[in-house]
Image 1 (cartoon, rainbow, N blue to C red):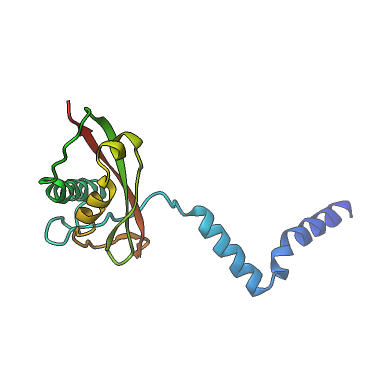
Image 2: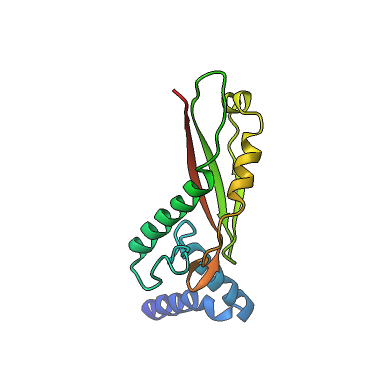
Amino acid sequence: MRKCLAVLFLVVLSSCQLFLSKEEKTDKIVHDELQAIDWNNVEKYPLFVGECDEMAPKDTQKECFQTVLLRYFSEAMADLQFQVKQDLNDTIFVDFKIDQHGFILISNIEESTNVLNEIENFNALVSERLNDLTTVKAANYRGIPVNMRIRLPIVLNTQ
């Protein structure tokens, strides 16, 4: 008799899931899926159309994306020249956002008092140059275009 009661008790405890409404079950599934997503990783990196192979492995896509982005970045900054009174040896970080439509937007340029003291309109000049970068095919996660953030350094060395 005790064994029957114990088994009945275990069956009742394990069947609590049967009493959940469809909405509660859906919420639980969504919650579990959201917990399982690695939000810091994408399945496909943004791609420059005509420059990077869409069918290449993820590591190759990443390398291609970084190489082409740095080339565009360097070309945009190549002919900027500044005159400074004191030598500079500083690194400024530029934060980009590539949105789900493939637009590359500057989200932040790190402030440096040393640089701003020597080059008053540095951030405006950099923003103006980099706002004209090309568009890309957006990064994907589970087949859905997603936003992606990137941080690139600008090394200033006048010594």
